[in-house]
Amino acid sequence: MFHKILIANRGEIALRIIRACKELGIKTVAVHSDVDSESLHVKLADESICIGPASSLESYLNIQAIISAAEVTDADAIHPGYGFLAENAEFAEICANCGITFIGPSPENMRLMGDKITARQTVTKAGVPILPGTKDAVENIEQAKEIAADIGYPVIIKATAGGGGRGMKIVHSPASLPNAFAAARSEAQAGFGNPEVYMEKYCVDPRHVEVQILADKHGNVIHLGERDCSIQRRHQKLLEEAPCPVLSPELRQKMGECAVSAAKAVGYSSVGTMEFLLDADHNFYFMEMNTRVQVEHPVTEMVTGVDIIREQIRSAAGLKLRYKQSDIVISGHSIECRINAEHPFKFTPSPGKIDGYHPPGGLGVRVDSAVYDQYTVLPHYDSMVAKLIVHADNRQEAVSRMERALGEYIVGGIRTTIMLHQRIMGNKEFREGNFDTSFLEKLVL
View 1 (cartoon, helix red, strand yellow):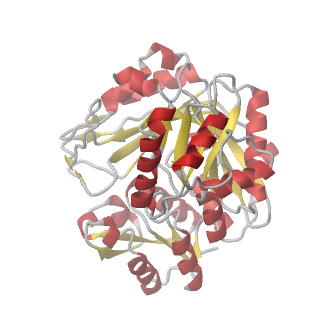
View 2: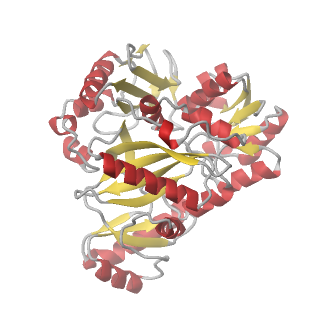
View 3: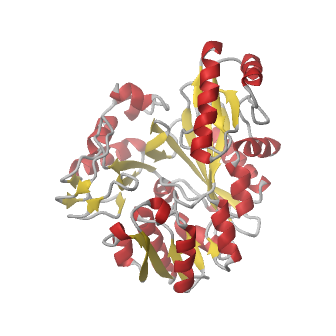
């Protein structure tokens, strides 16, 4: 096991990793920018070191500074959390070359699943269903026209190196294809340094369902069930729940088995997530794999009792999984609301000092947050203030518990999305489980 882990992140995920390390008896090193010196992860780690100014490029994305911090503090492993360098294969390689363990999958795994075309080819060989689309990058508009005519409109153009909605264009007719194709390539180049795009059939108003994978370096792979992440805005998740309220036991088993098969096909050896689209007829299709811990991992922890961060660390240390698939039992229902420092309906940023802070409590309520009273939410980084998670015996009780917890939550001095989540909880369609990825657009507009 590791003796000291440097956490190359900030905010609630850095705090979450520190807590897991403490329970494993591992010392921790926090890194921070100069404006983050009063952050909770800095205060609770065993050591801390400033790695640069406020700009992420000069601090949390500064590979040289992070490696230097690990070497100076004699850390033998680095946990990247999510975001920043978490899916950067070059960073993982540099860690290995410096004799530092990167807590995550291999650089080869990250590159393989990070390239969307290669990922589609790989999971297809493992028997995982994908949407009709291209096997290779689309080189020009003439080729794009032929492909679109073949698979039928609407189609979606995606960056091969993309994610988060960048380099992604939905096309409903031949007339709009040329502009959309050019725009997607331009966005892909600007966002990822790679203009390559591919095309697939557009799945209209699907549910977004993902399966949590847990794997070790000995070839053992299991899944921890699924999460429904359909409540989104511009491809960014706002609310997640486990299990998905519309999956039958048979479909749940099939989806889990497909996720495990895909992970085994690439020799995966860490925590990861297989993301699927679920259409109105309950057909599911592979979308992408996230080769890191997810923001929404707590809902899975709540229904399985598995500490995902702890297992990720154990796996990176070369230990075998402590669980077999038969050990995993889904118990009850969990919902997570991301509380962001934003206008609840306009979604404009609302950074500033928190003046009055009271998180909710009680049975089945968990708050993953790194803020406190008089803490300043900075404009330089992600706007998430907290993840509010509830667990109950069933979905109806979980919704009621979340309503109660949201009503208790006080974050003064700044605007937050608490009111938005209250509106979602009170919505009849949501309460009945009748929603898809277009839900929020219809609710707000």
